[in-house]
Length: 327
Image 1 (tube, one colour):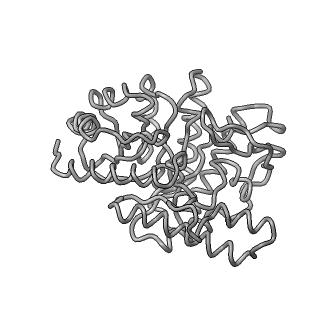
Image 2 (cartoon, one colour):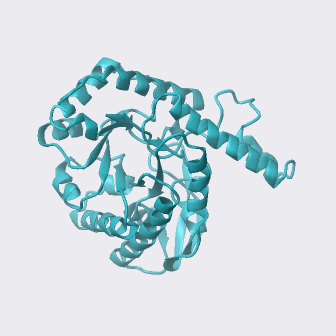
């Protein structure tokens, strides 16, 4: 059994006045008060801090924390032709926003910015580290389509592009690539959901390496068999938003490396370790513990830095208490 994170970590330090405050550095750069080397120095310090938070707490599968990403979807436009960046839109039911991509032409891979960012994080990592990318269905769902006017074609092309981008991350040293799919997780229409699942399988084939999916903000309990059939390296589930998922996994199992999102990344309250252990132990009676990953249910960037660190502390505490759990 290992621990990991999902997606992004806070870009601010625990103490706001610390010199490596990336938000303040970006503001200073845009106002002309500091130069590009100064901003890059703070960015690298922030990346090192995000990795240290994880390493110090025994995280087994590190994440880069998406420190250079402004949101989950718009940075893809750096590497993909046919995408432009639009205005700010609320990201689901959160007090965070993303710049929505606008599809203006047929999408194709033209750059290596995101793999380059990841390579810098990989060079600082003390252990295996995964890359995070938006999944093809979520990227399509959160974009404004001015080109295709056909969801199936758009999702298929995005799957090809994101699969190739994932391959570049694997070549840059990623232990695996995790596609974040909140839009797919909450998709109620069976036909659209089938498009999303097919796109994940297509992207995984293009990646030619270990690919995971992180499904949060929704409940895929009713279509776990369809999800299992696409043959990903693993899937991470949101057991906070959908507690019934824990029961389903304990009853029916799931193939690959199964991620259990047992900590609420959008709530500062710290979980009861006894209650969390009960959920994990029930699943571990059906799924071998060596195939389990424990993590927050979504990105910890929704919390202030001190709250995120407390969640990582609790994750470490729970994981340590479960070290003797066997099937």
